[in-house]
Length: 289
Image (cartoon, rainbow, N blue to C red; front, top):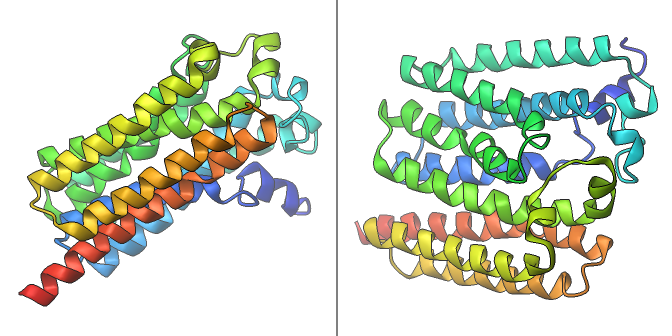
């Protein structure tokens, strides 16, 4: 089992860290706001490690669920389970070990965070199966990828205020955006094998609907900034995010697979832009104090 370490590395998708980053940005947004600009180092380390572990666990479960579909999809046919490098039992062992490690991490927090963690584990475990029954599995992905938000508030403040759920709503919208871009890469393959996605649901209106979602996400973030009495650094970050969204629209104008994937990857910078705006906001507050 240990000898084929590269296959395990790829099974957990550590060779493609974009997923970790897309989980980390909203979790870090939440930690910064919950900690009023200065979250505890303990929680930063716990949640950074926790996000990394849970993303790996989610990828393993995704490959377990899709092991009979992945060989028929160009982008996924060389994944360890699809190609036969690893057996199902190996993946199940890795998944259990990762979930056990995640449990150890959450036990270092508090009771409310532990309670929320069970819901997060359920979301991460069941998400891959939603693409069999609905064209909107991205909604569940957004919940799963954003569940670190209420958990971060619970760990920092021992409560989950309204802003935590508002940020979770932002992340759900964002996940629909970037995972639709991701699904546009596989749209033809998914149609052939019967897997559902928003890319298939949106069809020829995909760019228009994505634009509406991008504007909606920015409006939600603006409302959060207004409610929190944020000033220009926050809105400068949102303007940068808006520019990145416009770049993504340009990249997918011809719906070419490679460009759709590049647009998906570009969302890392959207998360970074929002984070920098948030960090700048609290830095300015610190100067004014």
